[in-house]
Image (cartoon, rainbow, N blue to C red; front, side, top):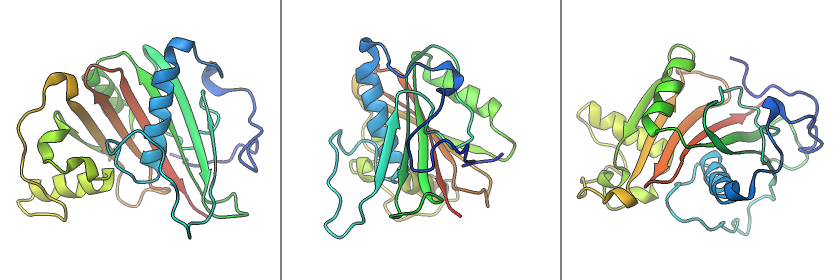
Length: 223
């Protein structure tokens, strides 16, 4: 799999060419809310932030370098090389963030696909369409990981679940909480690539209550 390949059309993060996969740049107005939600979740995922900590944008730290980010309602800025779920699509968003000033050879990139397909159907599709060696972990009720589960990033969730399967404990491991009402339940499936995979690719499938499912793809491209 060739992740983070540069098509030459985004040397400074913009320009873009013809939107790939025939996606529409301007989604229907009925899909704008879902696209905005997916965009926010995608940016959190590519930055390693918890998806459920809040919907508002966070201000960068005073001493943080100014990152240049671009988003689009198609796959223009998706350089992950990961497969796109194809069915019952409601909205699409992609992003790219150049985190090192004056450099375009290192960046975070990803895509968010909002679909009305069932959660289990999307998870099953990725299990069948990713290369060998990928592993997935599904949590049917995210809140049951504990009252502070909302503060866990995808990386910490994987560490916690992995340690639990081995009978150990991990930083941030939590006591299970009562089951969540279905309207507030968050289901998550995290796909982890084989060890040593280039550019730290990852996939997270998320469904919040009865809202449409989000397939979030991310990679961290480095020289």
